[in-house]
Image (cartoon, rainbow, N blue to C red):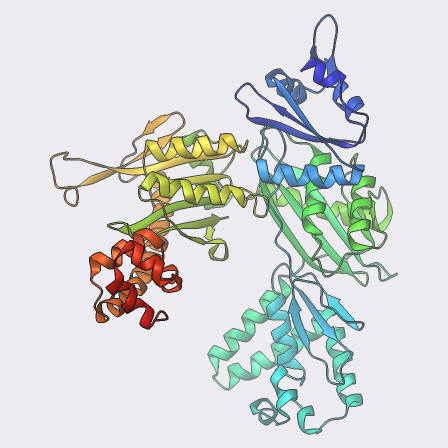
Amino acid sequence: MQSIIRDLPESPGIYQYFDTQGKLLYVGKAKNLKHRVKSYWRFTPQLRPNPSQSPRILKMLSETTHLDYIVVESEEDALILENSLIKQLKPKYNILLRDDKTYPYIYIDESTPFPRFEITRKVVKGKKITYYGPFPTGGRALLDAIYETYPLVQKKSCLREGKACLFYQINKCLAPCEEKVSPEVYGKIVQEAKEALVKRKKLTDKLEERMGMLAVQERFEEAASMRDMIQAIRSLTIDSSIDLANELDIDIFAILNGDERGVIVKLFMRNGKIISSSHNYFRQTHIFDENEAYKQALLAFYSPDSPHVGQEILVAHAFEDAAQTAQALSERFGKKVTITHPKRGAKAKLTALALQNCQELLRKKDRNELMEQQIADLLDLTSFPYRVETFDNSHLMGAATVGGMVVWDDGKWDKSSYRRYELHARDEVGQMREMLSRRIADFKHTPPPDLWILDGGQANLNLAKKLLEEAHVNLDVIAIAKEKLDAKAHRAKGAAKDLLYTSNGIIELKPNDKRLHWIQRQRDEAHRYAITYHQNKKRKADSQISLLEKKGIGKATVQKLLDYFGTFEAIYQASSEEIEKVTNKKIAKIMNKNNTL
């Protein structure tokens, strides 16, 4: 490794430290690779870690046996690549923040005579687009409240069809489609609605008035719905008396690391007022690096598809790479972005408010987190399993072989992240290999979770560890499998117990253990999801077989065709000559008569 370090180029790039087993320990970026990496080491009398480094760095260097590097064109490119590799590979000594989901914005396109408000998570093309947000929660409730309170065009189709609908009859639309309102009058209503999106007390006051009226009329379900809408709008932001008179648009970020987990708080100020807030936790790791945490948080939040980015970002702590991060964001969005750590004045009060909320959130502990901590202790995990992916496959005598992945995230199922896999391997280990390999290949788009749970025993556990090792990804894995209590009983009968297969051996828990129930719940949801997909595939395959049987092709011949071509679609697209090679002329002739069933 000494010769590699001495020969490093004086160019921007990223460097990677590996241990004896080839596991990735750390990814870092450098403006000058040679100078940056050499600063970690002393070369006399032999290669050894630089004793002036922090204890966490010294521990990491003591495990390092190999170094790789990648040269890029600029320091900003190195910053982006470093962030991407950390998310994909989960290095042992890098802090890993969870990926921010793109928050929704409410927008209006005023290039039309009768514009309407809509929700988007991406940039909308147009010259007169105005964005409001972001709204981490309550955005849909806010939009519904606008349409509940102001008589705007409720549906896109109304203007196209040119005919007033039910909303006109119930006084929730002025029917511009039938020219019952002028663009000027409609424009004044739009301006009122735009003000209500920012100064929301006016909006909630009107909703409360409406709720009271509904309650008096004993329309309790509608009143309850109105109450929920009001609560969702009020929960958008935290209480604050801070008000900037100069109507700036500012995003505020604060990151704080606790004993067991860390938290990121984001406040969004528009026109000098805080309009929404958000927070998310990140796992405890071997080290915490403030510089790395802010870099990741900002680059993840301001994705290239973000509809809006303010010119000024406030951070609660100064960090080393603030200038490079600001430059990277400026290039990404084609406008100047600054990152500032204010030390006094109203802006410093904003970052102090964000930090205060960080401290409060770190004090909170809910039941889910206590269970996650128990699971981490039980399985000796490197991090709390906030996000878990569980895999299972399903088939019947090799037919309609499919797999499913379900995702548990912060105490609830993240159904939008569920994935189904059509599998081709004949054996169960081969099927699991297909699923896991495809998931690993997708890490560059969707980063790995905190834990994998596999339905199966030691073979599947060994397979997953091997695949992850080959990909240099650090990810905890366990497997759960049933073991027969009576080995002589028929495989479909008799009682069974669940065993947990981990890197440290097999764990057997009592049937009433809540930790076992938590893991079983993950496995059972994966099984339910996979078997539902299998049943749908099997039903479709059975209908295809029935169609072929009606044409005089038997099940054995159908299976022979499937074994050769793989799918019914491939059978129908095959030429007569190909089908004849697999079966005979008679079957080829039958198929040729109608090859689109």
